[in-house]
Image (cartoon, rainbow, N blue to C red):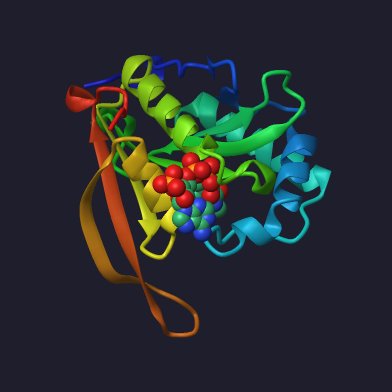
Length: 196
Ligand SMILES: CC(C)(COP(=O)(O)OP(=O)(O)OC[C@H]1O[C@@H](n2cnc3c(N)ncnc32)[C@H](O)[C@@H]1OP(=O)(O)O)[C@@H](O)C(=O)NCCC(=O)NCCS
């Protein structure tokens, strides 16, 4: 069992194309810009999306993310341009598969509108999986998406995750219709870098 009090989460993963790291105080302006510029792109599958998030609200959000990160309760990650001046998207390891000592987490992701559909989401997911299975304690990483979210589904497939389940009509929307969730996973013992 892992002593969660003694787990210090890794801070960042750097590639030539992006840096994935914990949000820090001061990142609010970049988060506000990226989410406000991506509202139309995000709103279909991201329930939290709003047409405009101001910098103060976004600063509160990144500070909460940082607090959760340090407390080992939720690991939200920003995907930044190499110079740190643009937020390209967001990801994270979310403890939706048990406590930290279960060593399993769900990966979430969005990519800003003008960086999406160029293969970036797939490269970020591969990086998150590679980082997650090397420097983090994860032995199982999952990905869930609406069946109609073709881009999300494709990203999971291209990154080498396997479809494990289809939860038919498991989400009820306010208008009474139901949506179906697909669940993908990758296991540390079989992770080979997602070159399928
Ligand atoms: C889902 C998301 C993270 C994927 O990142 P991305 O950088 O756009 O993905 P990629 O460019 O690496 O790959 C997208 C794949 O989906 C395919 N695709 C199919 N329909 C698509 C659509 N409507 N829009 C975009 N891509 C689509 C693309 O063709 C591509 O596959 P291919 O390489 O086989 O052609 C990003 O589009 C996004 O932020 N969407 C809105 C938020 C969201 O839905 N997040 C996921 C929640 S589970």
